[in-house]
Image (cartoon, rainbow, N blue to C red; front, side, top):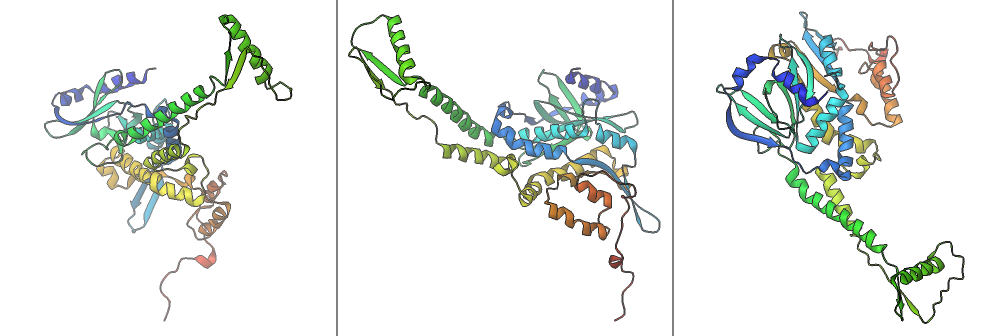
Length: 394
């Protein structure tokens, strides 16, 4: 099924919205995806992949925290089945992991990522779809309600209320709605990479064209020239030749060796350009090649992944739930426990957290990729770490 056709069904699902769209007036506030095809670059894709995979590994959960009459707090995880299914399987064509990876790729390439929330007749969310648009424009109706108008690659245009769109953005600076594009900063670096790659290919081709030049003193037919060259190569240039290493020619021809010129670009310059691209994506070679240690990954996580975790949590929560529902303690939390890169010693030291009731046994087992055990979801506490009730006598 053509994914573009899905949006035709969504747009016509509630015809009453069409009257709102007719009141829209242009404000000249837009975002356009860059068509530089940077995703075809191996350097860019390698820089993106760790971040995309990490965001896909986030686990979305519905959390409901309520305050009881006695003042205690009650915490429920995934209390409503329809929200859990929405997060695990946002639409019939992808899981929550793949939706998050899709949004992450769009966010990295364009500094903007969009997903459409489909709601039923009662306003409850039922499906989430990524919006693969080439441009987006912020427009307002007469009541200053914000809408986003998207244009797809086939030229079709769709307009949706901003309240039904999960919008992720980074480098949020000049524009009121959209993140600033990365293209102006990345384009000069990609031009250097392209020129360098082309230079390497040409250098390799030029270095393997002519190695020897035979100069004949007498005129010869073209076919004889080719035969003499082939005989010379077979006799003196073959790697299977087991001769003495001494070549001889008669007076009919002079053999002259051609030294190929080295046109390969400077390796240090290539490395500097690669590092500049990595810096633009806030990554490094160890992260790209999975050679990081515990501290290296934690630094990368706090700088790059954690801000998106916070944004996903806030954006999903405010777009999926109404203010009234949020007032009753409903929120979406993206859990990153499975992203922890820790040594075996660090993981073993987490046993102290279990003893103090900070982690359940099953949460500790999850760190080791072990299946949960019956009764492992109950918090336990050692007797010498019991809660202190009341102050002691002085």
